Length: 445
Length: 80
Image (cartoon, rainbow over all chains, first blue to last red; front, side, top):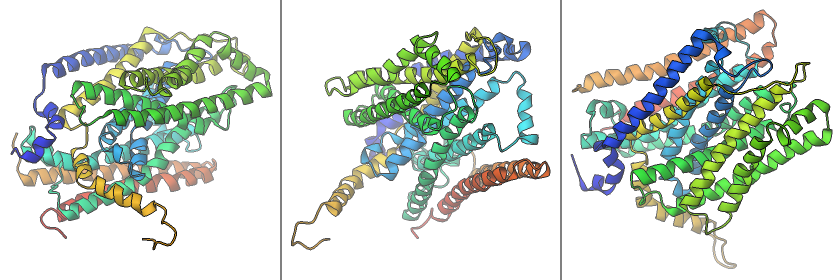
């Protein structure tokens, strides 16, 4: 039941087998927040959308902001994991699992938000009966469902060997691990099958992930609303999504490292590499933001300028400049300096980016609706307690999802770590030797 | 809770068939919308284009999952 090989990675199994009181306390607190959010939602269903801050002409508020935000965070996972696997980045091994879990949980949360935005959620059924696939809204439904399905399978398949380890150790509930391990014995043939399937999925998942956020941007850019009708919205949203995704991944990694004492697995170098990626994405995000606003300003179209000044110097200016600080200046200052690019600094920068990216979604959604092209007076949007509660509920579902996952499954892929120990050094050496330039006169290998 | 191997295998088959039911459901839904757009002459070309991408994606995911399940069952006893 208990052998030396399993003891080697016992820190990854310990949280599953020895559940502490902190787990139950966390679950109780999170469930309390979720129950309160549910109560507020039932109240919204009973009374109607009047309990929210939504009004004419601001028909989209927190729910759609959070929808875009959560779906953006989902790019942390499967996309980053797939890119790292595909590029054979060896340092990926302790990271990919957490990234994939983020995607699966956050997609489920984000995907439900448009339903919260409906006063009559039963009308969702109209999509099944008489939806129009010509509408970007339906492209969204299709691509998010595809991404969720692919991500869940992509999370599950690399989990199978780890589930088999738990099954062989006799970890409870035994039937669950027996059921989910799919008869895995670790034979060469099984390994080949699994590797082939993971390879197919990681190639598939990248275009699906990119399509998801591109299509979400189309909800906005396919309209003629000032501030939304832009050709760069697709890539702009994808860049923002990967940016916020990396920040969320770093926060989760730092939290689990601290709580589960995973210092031996998640080392400074992992944070350093990911934070450099975060810095690159920050610069890329700023480039897109600059291009987006410069084009609008240069055209000087009156309706466009109304939205522009509303963000730059009007009611949304505090949010706009906080966004610029959180998404660009703060990460740039912290992450470009080797002395501050340590775990506390990376945590601060990542939290800043998550806040900044949420503000970015708010700044995209609301100002264009408060200043519409149609002859409405300028609108006002103040989110109500209901919307704040559901936001808190969504965040709690995210944390609860992660806590429950960590209760039953290892948050770091054990078999991939072991495989890395056994094969990575040799493989990387061979790879480097294969692309090193051959000296003049020597025979190439 | 103790379950014998046969029951677990039946549960695994049922769970695997759920993905196929799901994919079939999605395909029927998309084909229904395609039919509707043809009936109403409502830009059916766009619907056809989306159907051609969406349905194969879901089917591929289900095929990959089934391939792994069958492969793991076949390869559990010996190296092939």
